[in-house]
Image (spheres, one colour):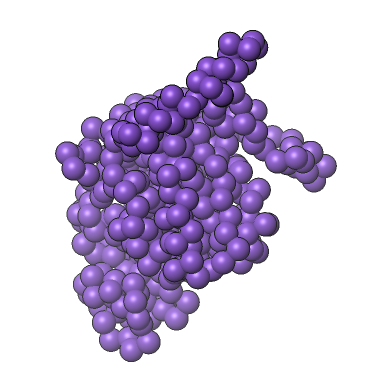
Length: 401
């Protein structure tokens, strides 16, 4: 059996167009009854079919798995099934709306897994925010699936939850709000640097937002060789002299900001090459104007970017957002379906930094043939993306991972 969606194949590549406004009636009609169903991919048209698919034939398969547990990987759907897990505490731009209200988002995520990665997945929303309880629940039901996509779980709990689940489960685990965003941001920045004629490693980068996405973007940029990164939270830059930092913020205050920049966005952006916004903050135009020549601005907050794209373009050479109605959409769907598909295809037990770097490189490479200030990543609807990321990630898996 497999989960099915209304769309089963990769759509053709398209560019953003000025579409007709979407009405509330259209939205609610599309979600009525949910967006997922379960399909059957074996015939059940005769008594013989029933005897093979269910009793008595299924008992032979169950006995075989009981005797040789590894057969579950080849004779059930579990090894190809992704659990999309949320507690509803950090949903899109809606915040802590709870598990039931988050379920339409998780259904949508499952639909994306099927459409863009060819993977079955199942939404699981949990009526608890306790990290211990979430881990216990997933460990107990782990025989039912082969990978975990954590989704819309608030920081800083998401860091501990992901780390401990990776240790507890012998399967790929990834918090997409962190690492999907980071992978696509790195891909986009790789190509944006080429457009403006700068070396990636030499960029001075400012990241507004020190939550799940901001920390992950900083992490992957450090791994890629960028050394001058300044993170900001609502109180200003993270630097070694701040006494109010703890946890991941304290760690990254030590690992970033080599010039020990203090202050807010104005001080951080003075002479900066790159601004990456992954918060709900607003950045004044005068701060963007303080950036270096050939500046790059990724204003990724949705639905309202940290700085309006038309304003950013007055001062920046390359501008990207998280929205589909502007050029250069930084969209996680470019990354997560292929990352999970590649990991599962290769039988990986973990999603490693090398696999994330490989995914970013594959995404960036797909845009190189038409690279310009308005085209630094492929469209999320480009049918080449899923297969390219899948192949790159699978190739990056090392024995024992």
